Length: 132
Length: 132
DNA sequence: TACTTGTAATAGTTGAGATAGTACAATAAC
DNA sequence: GTTATTGTACTATCTCAACTATTACAAGTA
Image (cartoon, rainbow over all chains, first blue to last red; front, side):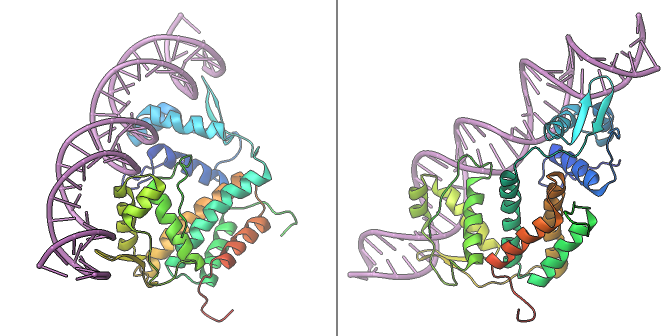
């Protein structure tokens, strides 16, 4: 997988790594048991400190996205959310509200933003209770 | 309007003020020309430094959300997005993607998150091209 | 054994966020 | 006019997160 760091972004480097791994897993570009670049490899490639990559991997492991094995590497884990439904709802809804408020101030149409949202949902294959 | 600062939050104080103003404007709780608390008032009430409030107001004015008048106060401005459609789309879509990726990893159903999103849109009265 | 891997710890740099204090300019009320 | 109130501006200082730099170590692989 191809990583890159946007130095112009106000998002921290370790967060950008996390974002990209999560995104690629969600897109199906990274699948279970697939190996990620090593800490030293990626640090070298991106010209940033190994500690920064290590931090990203540590947090990704804590979230259950990857599994790390000293001596062998870091691998994509199983999808397994251990958060309660209530917690997940609160977390996601906070973000949703913030987006909708932004959209309001940008005077973005209701239909337009719904369309964008639907596009994103289609792009990343979210689960469906009933086959859709 | 009632402000509050969550010290447990990892969101900066000045950002929390901005979030709350934007949210209340989007909810219609704050309307055009309505006066906001003075810098010193709000700083005193929230027990934080006046400079922090001043920063929030400065940024809100830069975004066109409020208008400040030395000597009289800060007031809610007209809705007026001066960003191009392309810029707005990029900004909002970045956030939308991030949410959908989160939802994927939390194994939230497609129908469920769509429902949450629709609820948020209804809560904040987004504009509609055709009367809906 | 030799090598690679992730982990950990320490020390230092940089920049954002926030505080503290002061001064100033524009407005409102008298 | 004078006085009080308002937002603005500036400097100095503090704290903390992010990041760098370096070294060492433990666990796995060949």
